[in-house]
Length: 413
Image (cartoon, rainbow, N blue to C red; front, side, top):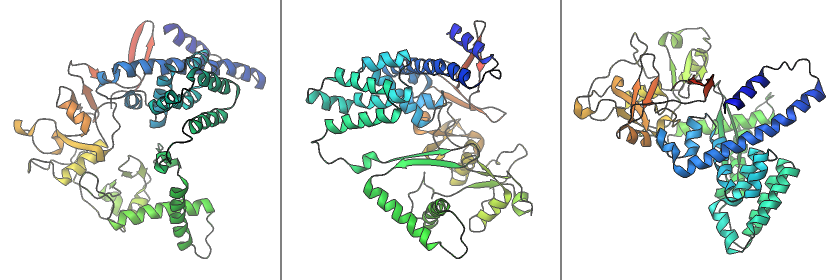
């Protein structure tokens, strides 16, 4: 591993500015092969970790959750790596091509769907030669673009279950939502014919109802505005399911001076997701919203609410949500509505039911903390987590050099 990292350091030190098109492409081709080979090793290691339950060492259930929390991968990418790793044991031809760098990690994950338990069971019932399928799909992956690999896999799965029952259309529905650093959101998804018809009809109804003279928005802008309006309508109706005992709502945190002042105040307000908006935008939201006053102490934290009840009252929970933003267990990304408010010092031991003694923890990590793990908030406001043996859980890749292990690139959060 040290030699690999040293080689990467050498590559990174090369000056690319003297190179022109063909030379740059010649440099890129072997790098892509190396990228695929490294992806294969990651998938193989993840599969081994998956088999022995290694994620439990850091208080997590699956390697997918470990990759999200400790490897900082997205949900989709973590699932892809795990799926590719599991497929290698059943598809030796794919494993060999992947290890040689002839197949990408994305292609391996797509082909990996033929090695899922349900698909393997269908193949066994019908006497399918999995080795032949492995060889055909691997050849397609090494010789054809990615879309052809996906098409071949889908064709195989459809033929495998050609006489099966009518598939559940909801199983093919997908919606992936990505929140960017500035708070903006991108999403992509797939709906079956009936679900898609319902969605398009609802959006189009808002589009048509919102048309007016002089509207110069593009079609895509109109549809995006309609989708936001649909969401706003549902929130305002108050008929959505509650989240941890509270009606879903858009929460904006802003200083009273900024809220009352006339300045635009860019970045003066903060949404529950952590994204910042201007004071002007916050004032706009407040025109038809509810304002909740939270008095902050000199250290920048909400003041003590006292020990009034066994369970944290709603206003203390809200303050904890504003402060913590989600589960504070290192490596976990569970949102606030999955979380309980945990007493750092147990109530039966005299611990106060106030913000200083509170921590947001999802159900699994709330259980972990009651079985030896420990979370603690440092004076700088950052949460740290320790295992029962006293070692601290850290996230992010480690930088090594000269035979010594350096600090993590990112500290525990």
